[in-house]
Length: 497
Image (cartoon, rainbow, N blue to C red; front, side, top):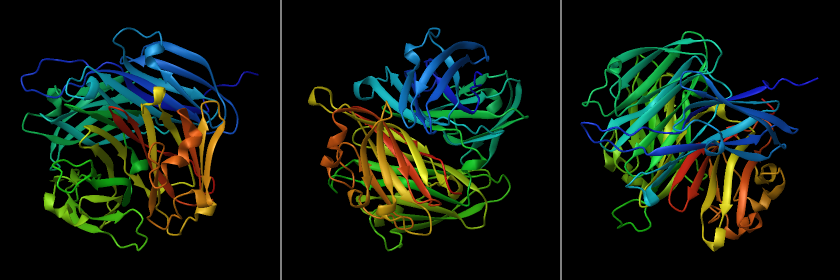
């Protein structure tokens, strides 16, 4: 009997071409984009996969059938290799008879201010679409703009209410959209629709989209003049009264340098449209197991609004607020809602001197798991020159220590073969409550660079992180190229909760 490929469905909002327009005010050019879907089989047996592409009207453009993927293995489905119409803008649905983890990688060319005129971004596909989507980080000013896509994941039309807010929590406007079955709607914030109420006086804010019934998915791409970043639409599953940013930086190679080598920001959205949310934000230094934060910030997120905290320029607080961290700091952040209002948010990593950026979803307690899949990991040195490498930042947000002897991190190639295994003494350390460590396939991270020599010079694959049953682990992952970078969330699959 032929098995029906609907056990796992991943929804990917794909945008292959960002249209450049001439505007009265100058905004960054997002360039021309192509996307890859990086898929990892998180099941126990070989997966048979189908990728179906739809245009914005919900019209099927192509079925890519017959993809076979061994357990744990990774494959890349490149839209530029598919027989899609020139200038295609649309979405994809990935169906499989095994569970999958996924990352969408976006490469944009023709971005004149970027290194090699190329930028990179990444976000996670979802297997859990929802009737309400949140986009906490939306921009429109001369330095950065957002392109937001909302996707109908079902075979029936959806009435969608899209609310636009400024950073002060004021509702600017509402757009009432009808999305055809499997159709999508994209808002290029360089030219926002009049129903959004977004004017030149509004620099940043947030978007909430609510469906009449059919479930939605989505993604948002941010374009600077020289870099880009993306994140998946957030849902109630991403909300929490406590949120975590596993990967955070305020680092200069030399304290006297004008620019930061690495710096970070978080955008935190209050999901309650009627009540303010006082919050406590704690910054913990990597490797410090004392449990004492290096910095604590107390502030308030207005009702229905979002605020930003940036280790370089302060954003919604004074830049000097972050001086206690110094200029050689990296670690993690814990955000607590002091009156129990659910929060949601994104983390942003900026490679300041290099001009790269990446975004990821802040994680809640419910997002943590004892097993994490990381679909996109690389260590590539063609002709002896570094072209692409990766890093994982792993954090324990549970209340008990995860011993290194009880933790295993496995690197698996595209065929499903185990290439390297780290456990016990080969890991950087135990993970105390709140602690994090990093592993970088080029420089080692918190390990020596030689720890990754077994991956060779042309590794493409993924990671499986396995902790004790019931442990609460979260991960953020970086993909770095010689001239660009991106960030995405690890995908947790709990085995004991």
